Length: 203
Image (tube, rainbow, N blue to C red; front, side, top):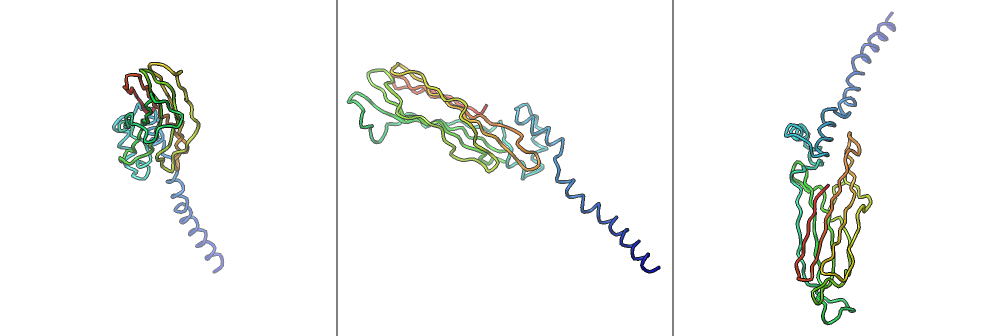
């Protein structure tokens, strides 16, 4: 009789404890409302209510881009400290960089991507490109660097020549997986009259 009583008590205890053990796993699952808000933010069709919902989870908000805070800066054409060995006496050679910085909803840097170039000018024309490349200056641990999707340059010598680059970045966060992609891009157009035109953004 005592054995049966103990068995009944054990079954009752298991029945009471099991839901408590299962509750954290359920709570840790993705929230459909948050998932929908993340998609709208990623597509830049979000509302302030979407931002407020994500901001309620500070850990997640630190990893989610704020499309309204993306910055694009340029380091203008600057003479190279050491001229290339094959430069002619008439050539003047420069470097320049455009950097796209994405911020999180909490204001932290999410990533900093740059497009760097070196070029030469002589007699009113852009004579050549010395080097061109893109570079991740910083990336949060949730941001994964993927392919360079655009890498183009127009011919030289010419009065102006344009270098364009765009990088694919994929972002993955706990509970919501790889939910978005970023495509920072920039172009620079040096001219023979020593003016540098430029632009950039995060697509």
